[in-house]
Length: 415
Image (cartoon, rainbow, N blue to C red; front, side):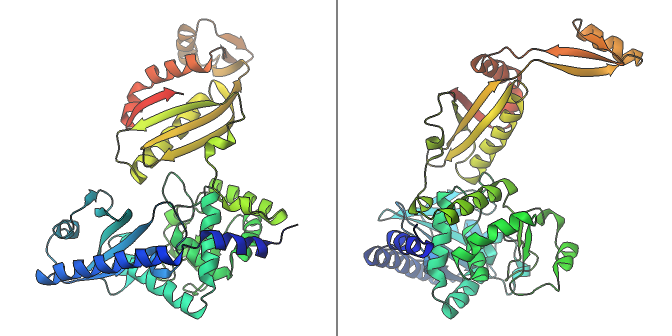
């Protein structure tokens, strides 16, 4: 049987970018930063420019498309910092919690993000304002233990392959920064992988690597309750009030845990190779595939809307069918989602109505449902589930048309 360490060596050999690629990316980043700094200085704008993300931490993994995160830390400037930055960057403006900009140079995507120059994390007005502190913290850890860089690469590639990478609301997974913190805490990807089973058994865990709280009790007493629902509460070492894994859902974590268990039982490079969700359904003859579009801007906003609609769609469908298997896949480039569902016919059922002795409700219910029947103390209606999926879909889109529009869904097509 393959040993995990042998697998890791092969994976790392595959996912490390070539020296030529790194030289190219670093050259583009250096040139862009230099030009932007000069522009800002000429206009006497107080701002620092720094490279963030995986490139700054040297934890970059091989991709089809590379991107560079460049942060502009503004001091005391008048007006909206996104508007100020827009005067110096000739690129596409992307709307978000704080607008940022995108440009392509030699097929490399550069994202330029405006942030506030703050002295301490508690002064942050936006999560991106913490980026400088995140980079500084990770660089310190990697300097002490350079081997962590490859362990972080393994964690990122594994999670991406298992559809658990990304803090976006439609993924509810591990962010890159959260994985970096987890690997720093456990010391290796293998130890983190082995910990998943124990975390699930205990119903969750609190990780406070820098001991910013006295104990777990203090965490639950002082941290905002809305940030405590994730299976792993990961205290951000740069800002104790923040759970770096607040967006991780139990569903995503449990699926990650199962994949860790399978990998440990039978280590294979296949666990580090991403498969399209469609592959899970391609041999299932009964699968229904829907193509769903939204009018929202592509990215996290659109993905989140499509995911919420998927959940609503499943709740409605489950009233008529048994949902045996489901899958959600959002394509950011095309800004559409594919819903995969495998269903079976639901048995006819009796649904309970009001009590017989409740005259007002009983009479009204009988008028609305003349075929209802009385059994004991209650009146019941017989629900027949005899629609095909295609018939039900037409009824659903007509009946819930207003809700569909309110959820910014612009098209639903059965493939």
